[in-house]
Length: 187
Ligand code: SF4
Image (tube, rainbow, N blue to C red):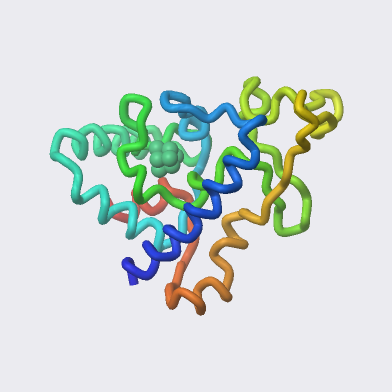
């Protein structure tokens, strides 16, 4: 099933690349910026978690050790929400090719299940979409200098793991949990 999941991720990555390119006037993502990995609870399905841990198993021992230290520290501190992802090592995602959907889609404006537009929180840090964001109304109100308007996309993680996707790719996402809960279960 993991190879079929990888095929699915390949399809998603192509689509996301097009979306990020389309939104380039509004995007500030760059190597070294990892705000989106520093404070979250990272909901992850069982299939995504297994994929992450398979990649983790292939890492060198020193990198695994650094990740384990962060995991143990989070568990000792009983962190449940708003923690730095333990896979972020020296400001870089140590499992980047196997990162979950929530990480792949972060940075764009998405539609929630109820059809509401969700703006990435880094807008408040002066990053993505900040030049076209009105802080008073918390809405996108302006266009870029070249007249480009921001788009919103159907990339909510629940949409990306819907039944139809499972049937098409013959995959099963399974249960959803916060990353820390999967890691606690691993022991
Ligand atoms: S898995 Fe990687 S990209 Fe996702 S939050 Fe963790 S470090 Fe960041």
